[in-house]
Image 1: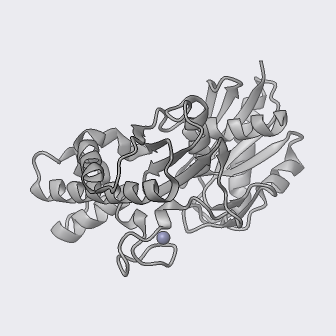
Image 2 (image 1 turned 120 degrees about the horizontal axis):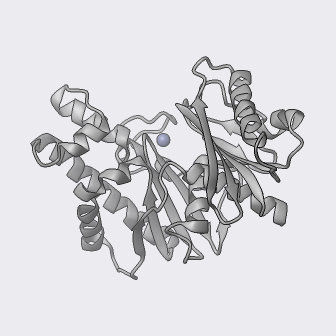
Length: 299
Ligand SMILES: [Zn+2]
């Protein structure tokens, strides 16, 4: 049996796991992400997790999913918009390569989620599908004929930064009206606060759907906006499936049907694209990162 390590670097936590060649997580470790903006501290924390995991298991390589535009050939973070402070420009592969004698592969975190779903999740029966990860932002991954679309400058599949409302709400990326300003947990919190002056978490707002008219209005708009965006994806890519994951999927009972109905009502043609919830939530980054290094080793 071949084992590798998959690492999922997020804004608040770093999750790492030993993953076998079938996509099972055998053992997990995690730690908080440094908030000091010191990249050496983050690298130290990643190294600590690797040391913990390799003390028990013989591994073949290390895969890392990181936010930001990632040059996956060089294993570098090109730019990042604020999620992990101080991480922009980090030569991850180079830095960890000085400490560990294993093959290392670095991938964008949303791409890692898509790789996971394509390998063992909701996308596994499709050669071409789009993955949407709904969390604090909206991450995207596009797989066409079993290949990840990274773009010519490693900036492709940034679905959250397509424009949904021209001249709309300002986004962290510098544009106005980006998709993730309207379709994400943060967006739901933003519009609820704008209407009520009350700051609630996305979870609380989704939970209040049936007893708070304003929460219901904000969530219905979110569902419609997601429906509009599915129409754009259908017309640009015509994939076999669209897989939707991320933490917001936990509350899908109050928005999924509205999203589908809005899509079907407004789309020019329905070629029966399958629209499916993701199979993996918190573990998709670890599993996808692991798969990226397994593919590298076995290519
Ligand atoms: Zn943006």
